[in-house]
Amino acid sequence: MDVVVGARGVARWRGGHPWIYASDVLREPEGAAQRAGIVTVGDRRDRFVGRALYSPASTIRLRLLTTDDIAIDTAWWRARLEAALARRGTIAATAYRVAHAEGDGLPSLVVDRYGPYVVAQLLSAGLESARADVLAAILDVLRPQGVLWRHDAAVRRHEQLPLAVEAAYGEVPDEVEVEEHGVRYLAAPRTGQKTGAFLDQRENRRLAAEHAVPGGRALDVFTYHGSFALHLAGRAATVLAVDQSADALLRGARNAARNGITNIEWREANGFDLLRDLERAGRRFDTVVLDPPAFAKTRDAVPRALAGYKEINLRAMRLLTPGGVLLTCSCSYHVGREGFARMLAEAAADSGRQLQVIARVGAARDHPELLTVPETGYLKGALLRAIDAPPDPR
Image (cartoon, rainbow, N blue to C red; front, side):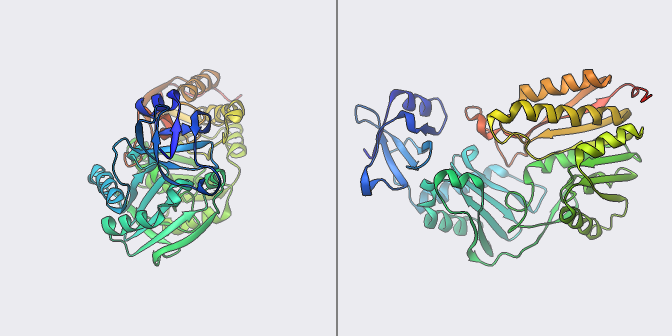
């Protein structure tokens, strides 16, 4: 066996979680043989346990690929990618996630399709060693015009891997037009967030649009490129889209023009400050969307993050008209669903509002969550409706 693990590591795999940490590894290659790659893993009695991605510099030492004693070659990656694609079924968009890493049994591999192009990420040293086989599988299954490696994710630092954005095959343009639910916008494969766009919020954008108050005033805070605002604009009379990045707002305005949308006001402002100012001014909105960036990058940051989430949600709740709806989200993995729900309840109590839960939401279905792998369930949110009048600001 290349690597031997203890009973706790074996139990972790058998319990459905693909990671084994360095503390559970009893024996691993030494010297020149200690290099990242695909390894055979056994237990302390030298019995076969599985094949895994091995990252000698990472705390997550092993990522399970299979418990079958089979070769991990191009054909294996092709079969896994084909299965992941088949599970997507029909998606009402030209951009979607084909492989969601652990959520699809393809640990540390992200594959996103943007029309005829593919943007992929290899997020572990073990997977990096299989780059050629993975690329061959992508080309066989998806037949793209171009493939781009988005290897600028900070997690690669933990694997002692370089950060870069580089062409893997063909050419991928700086911008790609995406269409979802009849709305068109420009994704930025080389420079945009994640792999070019927030594909995980696709279904929540449609949900927000469907529940937006017809003919009302909408507010989209932390709008980025305006994806929520564009969907809200088809139902609301006016939309105020807010972000502190002038460049992001410029792209949002271009997206609006692409759709012939003229009822969005793009405002450069800090989301916290703007919500405070709107409340002080006695402004009211029929629909509010809060989709902030992750406030908690580490577990230690959770208390401060929850305080930040509570502040923006409390103020958004006070801005709602009677019958108004609020879609609020958190993409901070370290903030769990229970903690997020508790924060919302506390914000509602402090706001003096009564809010119904219309729906609890997560990531789009092409970002599947495994019950045994909580790390795959990072996005959580709620769609709420105010059933009372806002308090008198005086």
